[in-house]
Amino acid sequence: MTGLRQRGDAPTRRPAEFTPELLAKIDWRRRAAAEPFRGVATSDGVRPGLFPLRATGLDVSGVRRAAEDYLTALTSPELAQGRFAIDDVSWRHWANGARYFLRHGLCLESLDGDRRGKALDIVRRSLSAYGYAQVIDMMRLNLTIGELRGEEHLLNEWLYWFSLYGSPEKGGPWGWQLDGHHVGVNCVVVGDQMTLTPTFLGAEPVIAESGKYAGTTAFRREEAVGQQLFTSLTDGQRTQAVIAEEMPPDLFVGAFRDNHELNYAGLPLGELAGPQRAIASDLIGLYVNRARDDQARLRMEEVLAHEEETYFSWIGDADDVFYYRIHSPVILIEFEHQAGVMFDNDTPSRRHIHTVVRTPNGNDYGIDLLRRHHERFHR
Image 1 (cartoon, rainbow, N blue to C red):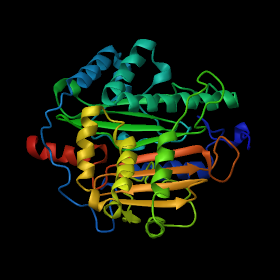
Image 2 (spheres, rainbow, N blue to C red):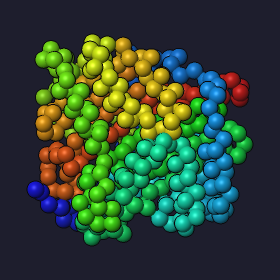
Image 3 (cartoon, one colour):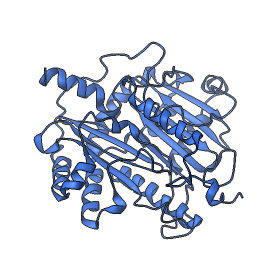
C-alpha cells in the first residue's frame, strides 16, 4: 500500500509561492470562466428546445424561506462577501482542488454554528436525505485526509465556501453554490424548477479507517453498479461500450470545462436487454436522486425520455480501476478512479474517486431556464 505524499508535494490551501506555472494555471481558469457560456455540447453544437420553462406544481417555498432566514442572519459585510447577482461569473469559479484561489462567498469555517447551520439548511432542503448525507460525507472525508497528514487546519470538514445568488426574498430566480475540496454543488431555482448541475463530488480516501469519522465511506454504490452494468454486457456490447484502452488523466467535463465539446460514444442504452436497462436506470438514479425527491422524480422522467439517445461508455478493468460515462442530450455523468494527490500512488487506485454530473446543451447553472425566464418576464 502506498503512503502519503510529503506536505510540500501535495497541494493544500495556500501554495508556498505562486510560481509562473501556478499563475498560468490560475490565469487559464479565469479565462475559461470568462468565456461566453455555451454549455457542454457535441460537435453539432447546442441542441435547442430541451428545457422548457414551465410550472411543475412542486413546492419550493421551504428552501426559499431557508434562504431568506440565512440572508437575515448575515451582517452587512457578510452580505457583501457572500451574496451575488444571479448572473455573476463566480458561478463558474468552482474547483475541486484543495487550494483556495478563486474561492468566493463565505467560508463555513468562519461562520458561527447558527449561521453555518442556516447555510447547510438550504443545502439540506434542496437535496434528498441521501444526497445531503453524501455531500456531508465528502466534507468529513476531507477532515480524514487532514488528520492523516496532520493538516487539519488546511483540510477539514468546514473549509468550504457557500455563496448565494439572486433574490429569493423577492420571488425571482436564485440559487446557491457550495465549493471546496472534492465538493462543487450548484443549485438554481427558476420558478418551481430546480437545476442541480454542475455537481462535482470526489474523495481521497473513499473510506475513513480512523479518526473522527471512522467508518465513513463514499461511492461504494456508484462503483459497484457501474461495474455491474459493464459485466452484464455481452462480448459484442462490451466492444461497443469500450471507447479507449488507457484511462484518461481526469474527467472530461470537470471544473472550468463548461463549454467542452464531447461527442456521444459507446453503447446506446436502447440496445440493452430488460435486466441491463434496469441496472442502467439504477446507476443513473444514484446521481439524479441526489436532488430532493420531488425534483429528482421530474429529472428522472426527463432523462428517461431520452433513453434511446443515451450512451454508456467504459475504459479500464472492471476488476481493477475504471472510468465510465453516461451521456445523453439532457444529462452527462462521469465516474473515474484517480491517481493519488494526497497519497503517493502515481497511477489510479480505488482509493481516490471523482464524479461529475452536467446538464448538456446549455442548462448547467440553469442558464437556459434563466434565459427563457428573462425573455418572458424581463423584455
